[in-house]
Image 1 (spheres, rainbow, N blue to C red):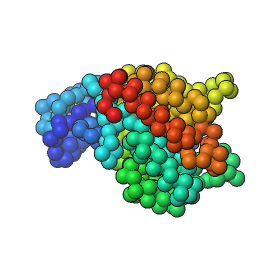
Image 2 (cartoon, helix red, strand yellow):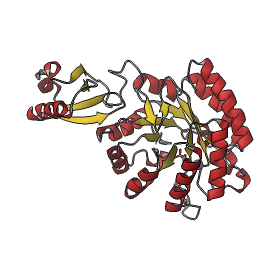
Image 3 (tube, protein in one colour):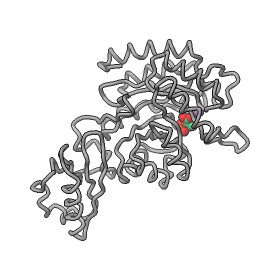
Image 4 (tube, rainbow, N blue to C red):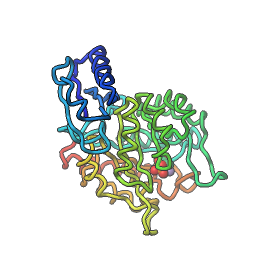
Length: 338
Ligand code: PEP
Ligand code: MN
């Protein structure tokens, strides 16, 4: 069950409800804050909770029964998809957000050049990893704190909000100081202690789909973040593992409309990590717009041939300009503001 609070509901009204729910001895309430509404997810004995005069309690707007196992991220009870604001940029059903940047922060020059390209292309946000999850422990692991410093410089110069990955619970505070949005990568989608930590920050989170995860598992991972107080979550489809070897991953394009039916959270597509090579990025980005995604995230690098990570899937600046021109036009035709 979900209790949707009025916009003007006070903290006291919220706490009064939580204690009422706990007093039943049969249920618990978890508060989660979105852009407009605070909601209380209630889990436990529905009969006992139904006995409470919830609608009569001050601050309550609506009570919604949720049949899905994911409660706070479920589409049930939300007539409209929600919007997640990230420092002046909106991710949601009205806009189309383009995020661009290098796979990894390699040095200041490479990052600043990528950031300038993203800015010039009209991208809305900058991506780039300071902490890189690598299959081999001998591969470049990212510049860590130095990478965060470089990202802060890029943000200062371009004004673009930053999304960057956090790999480890112990780094959440440090990364959150610089990042405008925290990225949870595919390999960490079910790292529940990390999901808890990023939930507690209250910062916007980009939750990538686990490469071996079902859509339900993905939404349950989002629920872990929401259950710790944070509903500012954007989902990112980045391809899943299948028997197909022609592409790095298989972009599950139907995941977008399925998520749309199941959840109120915004969902974007990362065609770069899905495809693994750049010839497919434009067609897959077109598909993302057409299928109703709320944005795309693409890799760009000034010199992909020297990239320390994911060079084959990086666009050069000129290719990024062409992509954003085309994608923005398409998004406008789909009724979105860019
Ligand atoms: C990335 O975005 O750089 C990345 C590592 O992505 P994923 O977690 O989807 O592999
Ligand atoms: Mn990458």
